[in-house]
Length: 321
Image 1 (cartoon, helix red, strand yellow):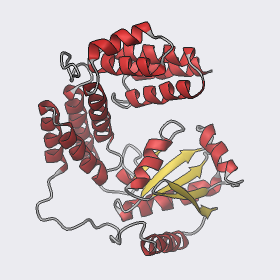
Image 2: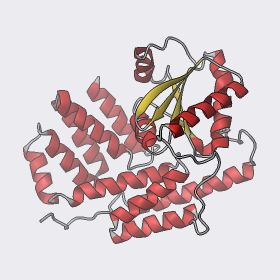
Image 3: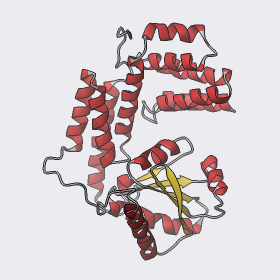
Image 4: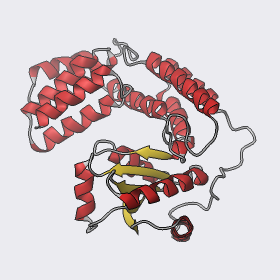
């Protein structure tokens, strides 16, 4: 029988989610004060919550996984590319108008060489280039800049084809399924937090997923899901045995992953990160890749500006290269 003699909500616990929720509300208030122009005071893109910057590390989560629920258009661009600066604002504007029917993911190919190389492997030699990702499948969509009317028409034709093929439902842009009693985002956050307190992980995850469906850029909801998934994994373990195995089997990738999960929920964040960084150095092949990917999932439990995450990422890069 799995052990329950550890704190499910230690240093990476409900308090972190609650603090993030408060920060989210403060950002929303500042955005409201800034007005509803195409670009806010802080330079927010016209597409608002429906535009997300994607990196080599986040592409799988932000694009591939998200595309299972909503189509994602991926804009490959670079700062030196003049046509990119013409097409980008058009796509951001249309993403805002679509209001969640699709999401725009922006990839700076200079800052993300792996995705740039992937684009070249697809046979694309120039930018701007836009791909459509639907249910995990990437489809070439636009190559080169175009006027707004042409881009709008191309997107409309794309969605007509997707609806015809049964890949998406026919929900008009800017509309959501009717519901006279749809809860607010804040009330859904409260429900998620209450479920976490009670240990109702399925209910908590469902609430965070509901928030994310409304706002794909809600990082706090994404961190809530990461915390739920971490908690689920640890619930299936005997915590003390997992730690003993991790100490006894330094070269065993699974043992190190389980040990890091237990340390994470116990509030030993740096120890968890350090354990997996060391495992990356000791392992190779599929084991090494599994440890690396798991460490990235643990980073997602904390805010990206947490200094422990920054330190962990630097240590991981050092271990890999």
